Image (cartoon, rainbow, N blue to C red; front, side, top):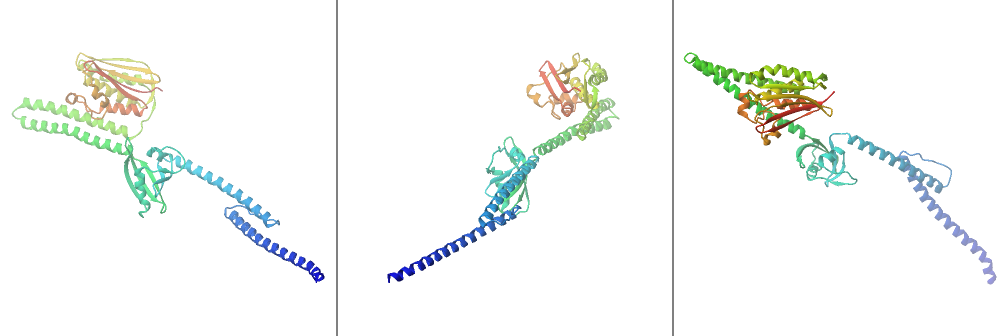
Length: 410
């Protein structure tokens, strides 16, 4: 029996070896199938990302390693392209004057450009930013089903008026385009006030003209002296109306187009305006003096003459007989400065900040008696600023006032 067992032992050993080998082979095949499946999925991913699949005669492990290497290179290339696209996107958005905001339904800001940050006063930084209440309110359009929505709202301190256009991108995000309409709104308010003021200013002389003409018609047969008095009044009001219309036309021309600039001698322009107005000053008993230097500016000659003339007329209107008006032209740090100083009654400190506003008068009754329209100083300021300069005024009650405008020298 022992001998039988001895005979069977080698056979069992061989059988055991065969079984072990079979188990190992079966396990290896399962593992290879897994590796092959992984390799195929990786190669598919590489191809989907636009990468190149390298095929060779190596083992599945070698081929998987190659595929993984290709996937790494492809994803790195995609990441590089994505980063470049993000940079291009940010560069393009940063050049836009409009604010661009992508807001989540939750109220978080996913993306915004520099203009939007300025409008909403939100600093830079990475990651999600919580949207202001006004923008979160606009986010309701994300789920409202509206294809496009527009809304205007006031924001911040000092107030900024923004116009928002909201376009849902999907059920989670919306694109909001912001326009700063503060300047347009301010311009509309100025125009509204200007039309109201102009209508009021025109109404007064027109009413006076009608009343004077009616009086003349009724008084002429029986009261020629009364008719003559009202005829003189009629003439004065007609002159005032003509001056107002002239100033309105000047303003209209100034605002209609940019001036044609050329290098001109500002001293010659000032000298000419002083000479043209000297007879009117002498008739009013006012001495007109001028101290000028030679200075050239790049400007519109007609507009410079208009500015100088308006300052001179303003000084004459508020000066008494026996006083003097002094005109100077000087140069200061690259600026040509025109100054007109009078010895009039002066301007109260409370009125100085508004003295260059349209239709603003310190002494309304005196201005109207002198034929003033309330537009002369506003025209001076407008001309100076559109030539790259500015205006200012110094005044002391009972002593007089000095008005200046300046523009850069040529």
